[in-house]
Length: 280
Length: 253
Ligand SMILES: Nc1ncnc2c1ncn2[C@@H]1O[C@H](COP(=O)(O)OP(=O)(O)OP(=O)(O)O)[C@@H](O)[C@H]1O
Ligand SMILES: [Mg+2]
Image (cartoon, rainbow over the protein chains, first blue to last red):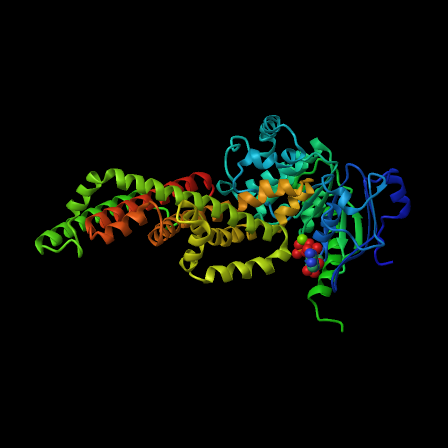
């Protein structure tokens, strides 16, 4: 089948590396908006603590996938959505998955601290305690001394870090990050990637991470998924067997480059379907 | 961020005072030099003198009119914002309420005043209602534009945190709409005083409009001008107060 991994990543290896209970288990997940089928038959298992990156052509349904897993949209009937071993409706996931959308969406009238504690406030936590906790986390997110600044006083990279901090403060086992560094310049982006790995290593959450950038996908992920053109499905799945902690010079290693070539080929093939001449 | 042309800076204020002073000087010279009769233009000095001699009448009238205007202003503001909120939360209402409000507003508000006076009497009640009607439409339009600026993606983010509809309203929709609500409130200050005064001229037991009307009847034009000055000062003070509040509350622009 198209959606099966077509690589050296065999079923035997999968059985060895995958423990029993995935935190997220999607089977035959589809979503149709009127005439448009955004995703079609997505099958995906994510293990606790895993960092999975998702790449795919623009408009292939990556954000749609996240909107379902965060509980904002119900999938079409026939889709199976399992979370922590239980079969659930998408809306049951509202408040249970920590979701960072494509834009930072900071609230202009709240300073850094108060933006970061928004999810805790919504949960009904004590505001003073939440602020204290956020205050302690500031240095880790490179925001020490910026507690009282407002979003319009921050650079793009800092706003993104505040949004990430807000996502981390919402302590849920599964984190969905939708192109968190998409709007940043290359240098800031590299810094943020390394920093994200540091933070992730300390907090050990399960991460699903969307990106357009294959380098980023390999550098960060335990596993990279390539999606097909719309309607999106999983085209290719590759394990990233590169040691952690990962350094910047990793990107020039032969393993990295070989993996990158495979992934780029797959993405190129799918992008051609989106932008190439129509077949009918 | 862009500077709002409607909020005066310190310089603009100084220039305004200077311009006003110069105008008064020319006015005084013209009125005295050409020996104009009071019904055309009384001298400024006479008007200022009248502030003092008629201070009880003018002060009482100003308080009376400001009370009516402020009452109607708050009532109309609340109605306008509440309607805009209904339309935002229940989108099907939009197709009913927006055309209805536009239709009501396209009739000049003063045309309603005989009816309002009939229904609510000659006292302060009818003025409060007139002001509320006038203000509520402006506030409805401003608040609706404010609520429409709410980003659906932010709503979704709050939902993903498990937020209730009330929490989304309180923590997202209202603050997002606040800048436009407050600029509507600022623009409504002047309108509320105008409507209160005009309605008083059509029938009242007190207030600046009533003082003006009475003074015209007894051909006391100095009194008319004194009341006009007091009305202008009250209007400026009201506008300035709300502008100040606006700048305090919407600090992030
Ligand atoms: N709420 C919606 N209503 C109708 N169509 C939608 C909706 N959301 C998404 N779509 C459609 O579904 C398809 C997939 O959109 P989606 O945003 O998931 O793509 P994406 O992979 O995240 O793209 P990008 O990489 O540009 O962010 C698009 O064709 C889009 O127009
Ligand atoms: Mg997207």
